[in-house]
Length: 125
Image (tube, rainbow, N blue to C red; front, top):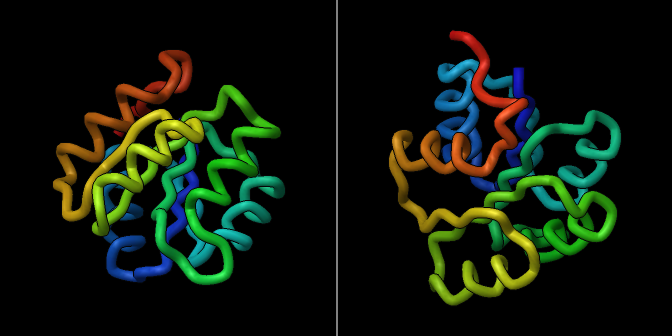
């Protein structure tokens, strides 16, 4: 069963992501900001990280840089409701996939399937 780290400071977005991914058979870990997310990942490695760009303490671009340096093969999905230009920056920094908020559960799950390595795949629901 693939494990996914969700990092977003908005509790409604975190809940939406967690509920959607759990319903699809994934295990999820959540964090409300970047430092907590990196700590969580180092403690309990996951198969995928999904991060918001704008957050207090440490933003998503810092998360991408930190994870990409140590774990170059880790798939990372970046998301923002702000300017789409930031998603281009995230891709240049190593984000595997991007989502512009708001997005549907279908868009989320399609991208997760696309970026997760085949051997991790979806869990049987």
